[in-house]
Image 1 (cartoon, helix red, strand yellow):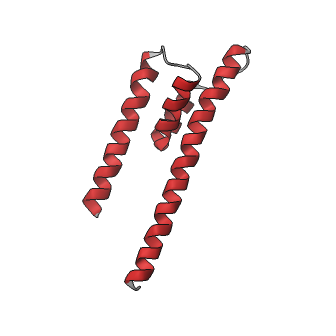
Image 2 (cartoon, helix red, strand yellow):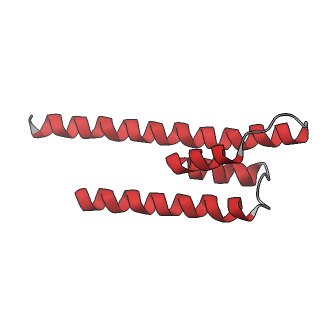
Length: 102
């Protein structure tokens, strides 16, 4: 494989990673909004573990934006601390791995 082909493959992998990050963060944001609406209308709620699963799949930025946009789950310490902590740790680990394998 030539260097040009390798570079093209790398760019396409980066594009796919960015798209995946955008999608999972949109899901995290939407889940907060949907659950807030369900809380107001006294309907079936999204399980709390789902928010942490989405956050663990690199959706923490969207989840945090949703928390503060919709003012949802911000008074629960495990959300106010856990979601940002998971986000910082996993993004730091990802950057560390990228730099290590560069």
